[in-house]
Image (tube, rainbow, N blue to C red; front, side, top):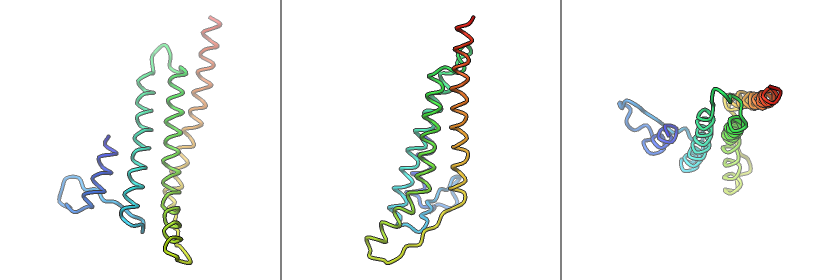
Length: 148
């Protein structure tokens, strides 16, 4: 919820109140403000959905079933949604820039990729490996219970 609120503050406040306790601004990366705001909203919604899945996963963790299929399924969804958000953050601004350049009849478009955005894909990929580790732990836990 905080993610959505900060995004909304960045879109509508536009950093106009510099002396406020919390100041949020929208970085447009050279895109028109409406497009940058739309991308920010999409990213905030996908990120919030990922955090909801993480909260659901943590709510299902129990002492007797640390690696249940319900827990690992939620973690996989969390990792997937986070990967979608990271990929959208990398792909949407250039796609919109290209589309706007094509629509305006420009012969060229300048595309910039931030190393931070590309680097954000790395931890998300690690979450997929952790999800796979959770799946294996769940399988081992089920095997152990069936033996005993």
